[in-house]
Image (cartoon, rainbow, N blue to C red):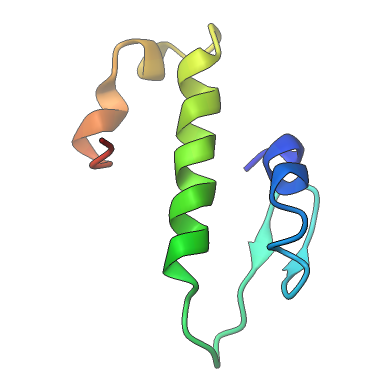
Length: 68
């Protein structure tokens, strides 16, 4: 995960420990599915727009993620 994504969701991530590239979710609480979906969708959006990633360019990631 990139720092830009963490900054985009800064308000929603205040309840969790974060580093420059990770969100640490507590093991003793339910996983915030809606937040995780938002983070993943934004990550995929950024990866799709990035000319660097050949895997994304070739859309190989679609077999692993079901994105609408």
